[in-house]
Length: 123
Image (cartoon, rainbow, N blue to C red):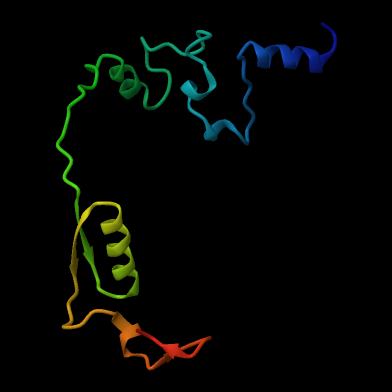
């Protein structure tokens, strides 16, 4: 092939990648498929972090476990957002415990006489 673009396209299709000075630090060998084409050996120290990657191959498979799901949640803060979150969660069938540090709920909104733009009572 004498056409450099066709040659480059063929390399890309074959999974052969080339790095330049700007892109060298952006990738690790696994991201570029170097192991697949024999450009990196896991039998000798070729690059930083290789030992960790190599050891990961020998880990036991992750064990699947089942856990009991408890549909109960805690919402901290009885302001407008906390109240709305509690209502939405309760509508979804989740038990909700709402905790507010002051003696009343509503937060700052409860302290307002009227709210913009409608000038309605806040609560």
